[in-house]
Every structure is written in C-alpha cells, then in structure tokens.
Amino acid sequence: MLITAEMKMADLIHMDFQLLAVIQRIGIPLGFREKSIDEVCIENNVNTDFFLQLANVFHDADYFPKEKFLVFKAEWFIGFLRRTHQCYLDHKIPEINEKIVSLVDEIKDSSANYELIKNFFTDYMRELSVHIGLEEKTVFPYISALSECINQGKKTDDFIQNFEEYGIDIYLDEHSDIEEKLFDLKNILIKYLAPPTDNCKYNSLLYEIFRLETDLQIHSKIEEKILIPKVRQMEQEIKNF
Image 1 (cartoon, helix red, strand yellow):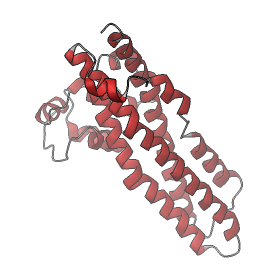
Image 2: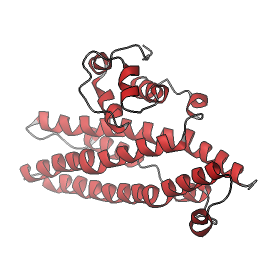
Image 3: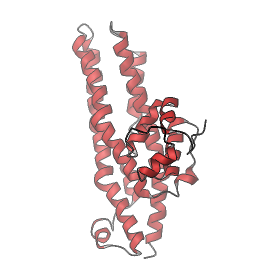
Image 4: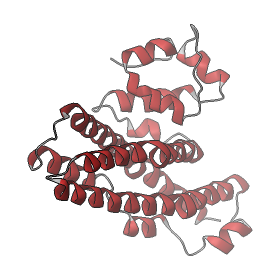
C-alpha cells in the first residue's frame, strides 16, 4: 500500500509502527490528533514529498524511487542521517549490547561462547562509531560546503581551505559495509549457539539485531544510491566555478 499525503499521520503509525523511526528522524514530534501527513509536515517545516518517499522506502522493501530522491536537497538527507546516527549510538546499539551482556552474565556453563559474542559486538560497536565519525566530521561538512558553494555560485573560502583536495570517492575508499557483520552475528546466534533457558530473552536479542540490520540496509542504500550520486552531481557543478 502506497503511503499518501492525505492519510492521517496517526493511522500511518497504526499501519506500520516501525515508521515511528522515520517520523522521529525527520524531526516531527508526536501529538498528531486527526491531522493528515501533509498537515503535520507543513506544521513542522518538513517537505511532505520527502517524508512520503522515506516512509514508503521503510514501509516497502521493493519501493525505491531513485529519480524522485535525487531532486531533494542534500541538506535534508544530512539531517535525516544525522538523527539516524544519534538513534544508533544512543539507543539501538546500547540496547543490543545490554541484552548480550545480560545473557553472558546469566549463563555459566557456556559463557565462553557468549563471551566471544560479546567481544564480537564490542568490535562492531567500535567499527560503527568510526564509520559514523567519518561521516559526521568529514563527509557531511563536505557536502554542506558544496551546497554553500553552489548557493553562492563560487568556491567559498571554507571550501578552498578545508575541502579543495577532498572528494566523495575518497570517502568511498574508506567506506565499509557496516551491516555485514550484523549478518554474521545473527547467523552465529541462529546456527551455532544453543539458546539459554530464557528463550524469550534470546529471541528478543535476535529480533533487535534483525531490526537494526534492516534499518542499516536502508541507511546504506540511501547513502550509496542517492546521497553519493547527488554529491557527484554537485562536484561536477562546482568544477565550472
């Protein structure tokens, strides 16, 4: 089912509660009453079509209108991705880590196996933090500097000083597939480790890993299929300055 502007925002959440993540990351607070998606977006200074495209991508795995996404401003993606990073670092990753630590603490006989899982995820947290740090400290400021150059019709002093020698392909050379290790962790838990007595707690851990993996896949798709091609267009544009 395609999500449209006339739908009530509250009905959207009832239809797919996981879209709460999109609503939060685009900067819309709860408290919709009976307002439509369009009304809520207008009230919160959010482009309605941008929200609709993101919501449909998260709702339907087969939906990905690249051409529509490419017309949106790069700054809109940066804002969304930054809030996504914050969600990962402040909530999703700590929650999964807490569940893993809890399992390790409760299991005595096979704790060595779970200790390996804990160490595996600790390494993953470190790698994700590096990945996010690169984007937050270098890639996003670079894109913002490109936008400012385009807005002014010339290379700004900030761009010349900080980014003249940088390019999005440098980022790609350092870019890693952060969702692949989650797939490995998920497989280890499913295939090789017997669950503890509390199957509910074990399944809850797996469920959160599945959710994070799916979220990261969409996150990476937005970066690789939309943001990077858009930045290449911007780079071409400022070559004429």
